[in-house]
Length: 112
Image (cartoon, rainbow, N blue to C red; front, side, top):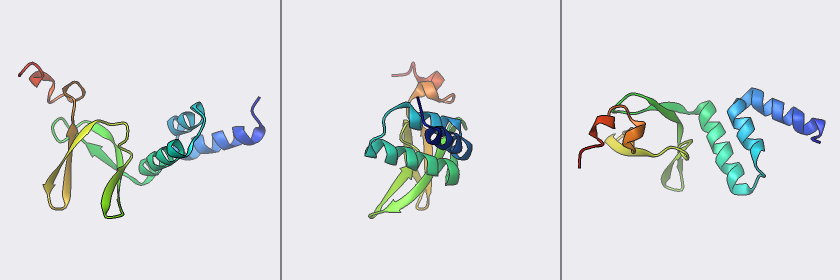
């Protein structure tokens, strides 16, 4: 049986971050790596920008670019398989890496 504090924490997280985030958080036991990954995804969901495929225009997800230790980390893109290219010096272009996820690439998957 869960305690009232756990239920209150789950309902508070569900209200703040959304039901998908709260359900994923309490679905499995928490370790440090999983907690960090979920928190990064939650922060990207709140403060990030929506990323769309440059070929088909479908929404890929929400991402937050963080400069850390001389590198750029894209928080919130853990579960998505995407191709990232530099459009120019200050702009990234995202597209689906798998043809079956992208409406613009589906008719090209029969080509060698």
